[in-house]
Image 1 (cartoon, helix red, strand yellow):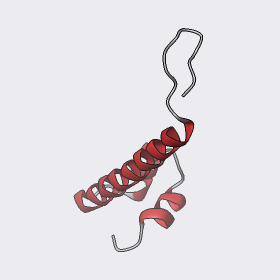
Image 2: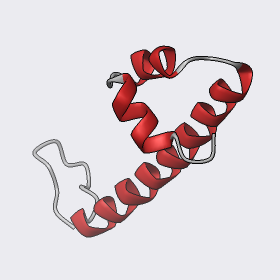
Image 3: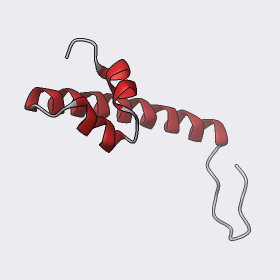
Image 4: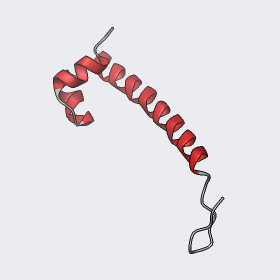
Amino acid sequence: MTRTSLGAADPDPLQELLAISRERADLERRQEVAVRRARNTGYSWAAIAMFLGVSRQAAHKRYGRGT
């Protein structure tokens, strides 16, 4: 473990990468659930895409299976 100029311990970079990877997977699952709930509530792909910051086609392509 290395120390910063302020003396605080830096996390092990590999452990940090692992933690980030796990967080990303959790966020992906949460996003999929939220998209499914939005579709089940009646929101359009255009509305969902706007909140995801992607095109309607991209949102549908990524999350459209089974909804």
